[in-house]
Image (cartoon, rainbow, N blue to C red):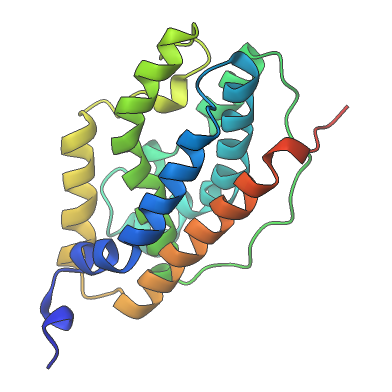
Length: 194
């Protein structure tokens, strides 16, 4: 048996997506999205588009039995509030993704939950241009139990269950990163509702 198959699921996900994740982070930072209010607006719109797909996954009936406090981890409503603070109308509704099986959905959530770790750095950048965890950058705030603890609880939950297929999880995470890359490449053309 290959050594990779013996690794915990969270470690397999990390190894399968590290390069993609790092490239995406570099692309976001190279756009200076935290240098101006307009750049930050584009970042929050990007987050809205991605979290629109994550939103139903935080209510996934199978994952709710696996991941602690799954519904309370959802940041989509915070992104709504951040857009209101920015005076930005909500983007046009995008066609939802097909219903996800639990394993693929867990891969998507791995990307969403993992982004909360990097948000600790991003909120400091947002504060430099006037946005905080109570105005404009709510979605970058840590979960109540803290970033590290929340991430550890998520990782342990997916590592300890036998209900998830690793290959489908990896495919879900790769799909999630691909969607964020697509949104980033079109961020200057995001359509909003009148």
